[in-house]
Length: 197
Image (cartoon, rainbow, N blue to C red; front, top):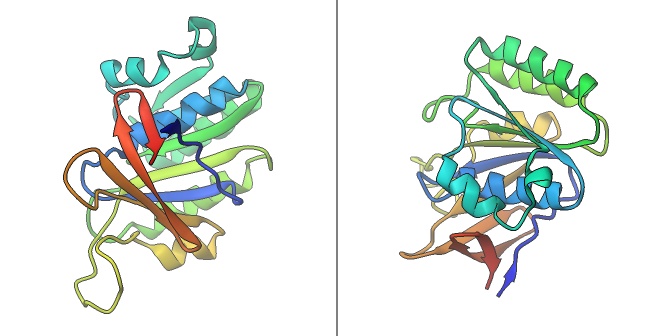
């Protein structure tokens, strides 16, 4: 099994994650790949990634490489956090990935205000920078959709040019499935990241 490389034609990505199946780990996996390719990563979340998990996913990188991972907190209001990200992008060279982990409430509708701030951020990004949003997915109570897990605010996010990816655990164990409108890939979640099966 080889290390999986996240591929998306679109640089704006909304990843909806079934409860506790490795969304932050997937974000760190993508971040480690970007850093391994010489880029810089700006990670923003309410909480910083778990130190042990961070170490596992970054252990193949040198200390100097890992120093290109910059973490910020949402501790103030969301709009101020977006301002801080835009400001950091102006001062940090070679940022290739911005990750907003758990950027919205974990259930219910995603507030329209948050989506408009995300859109503002997306319009301030250079073409070569990927923006990865990670949030909890939802179920379809109506039963009209095919599948078990769905992105919240899917239509609103597509309207501002985001591609939707969904991370689920189809069966017990390390098995994960990443799906999007054009397909899906089966993965194994290991200590050091995601491997394609």
